[in-house]
Image (cartoon, rainbow, N blue to C red; front, side, top):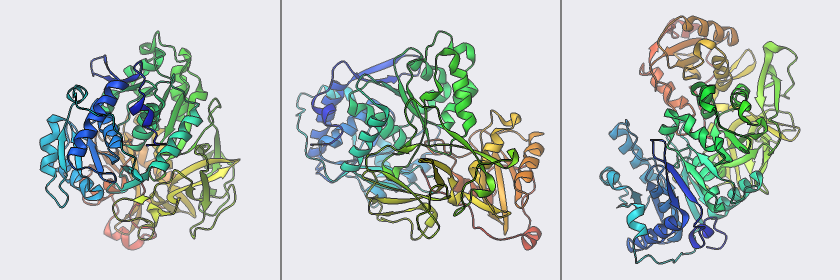
Length: 578
């Protein structure tokens, strides 16, 4: 176990610290680290009795619960690789969950699935395909009371974790992460945040996603720090309760996609913050999709009257294939922003600052590498390095880059270039960006772009335009780019009933992308399909749109006649999950 990041939590847990789980009613249930460690060792005994040996994979499907932490510690003590899987969602189609579970089993080939008693039947029913893992239903209470638990930990196998990409570009990919890579990433995050045991974290991110798992569970647990956990659905219902943890001084650190900050500014009124003090809130890591500067500014403006400092906002870049964190903004510095000339944000071109507001694209710096030995390289379409300031594909390397995909496809880049690919400790991300004054700026996904009048247009940029419309301020929205019926097309998907906003939005996009056909699709909440980290699942939505299953088309789609006259340059949208 030497060097494993969870060693101290298993063998020397601090009884004063632990994890508090939100109960959904305004209270928090405390699970001390010694109780979780005792339950972890008891589970390790059961895993060994089930025949689990070092190198096997143990899947945890328990939701954001104490049982998840127990499964993580138990698999680690047994020397097995750990793999998180989403528990059944409240309104999820059971058949869809079964298919997703079978895909997980096929990808990671687990020996055992650990779940809670209420879901045991669900996972036993899914364990009927080519790979049939045994299902263990457990609770922390019965495990921690097990008198036979032995504090014995096997040395870890080379593979410590199998985690999944978000799935925004299709089925999620299983990523094999070594114990070395996991430790390197956690050390990098702790050093970046100057994180000590006294620095508590609070999070609403799901445990089965890399940002929630590595950034907001493994890193604080390995530090022996307190942790406050909300389920995503509780955060969506009650974002004020999440803020209250920081406003009371109980927590100082967190991470969130930009979606989470926007949700707070839309749902939390000023009066709800009365009596809160955010002066001690030290870090809000912001990652996932390209970060809109206005989201950072609105969040800081809401909390500033109560002591929040905008320098606590730390824009970052990361992905599952690099374990998690790649770059991050410096602690205690204001977020950096620049206005780039839109015409220069094309692969191979040198980015130039904008001198015309109509051509300006606001971009936020994602900082510099946070892992010792980690590097970021920008390359052209042939993989040749580009100098600072030139736009190209982001390539990351270093000790925290994963070993490859665990589903038998070590290099996803040969067949699908937009998805990137592994080459040793280097990974081509499929994302576009540039380095300026040493900082990484992310432009967008190469697979979510089209050429328009010689300039590359990214879906993320058009989504930022939509967010600027006051009529859509509270509506979920996403933009899809691709070729429909032979015509290059921008599809705006909006969670709202059709109304006057359709004309406003259509005219806005037609001015911005005059060479593209514009289609507006309206639908109820849930029409914009999202990953577990709230990123749009653009490929799934594009396929649903082509099959007329996405929503109500409020503006005309390209016709066969238009196809005959229109250009045909780019295939259907392609994107890679961060």
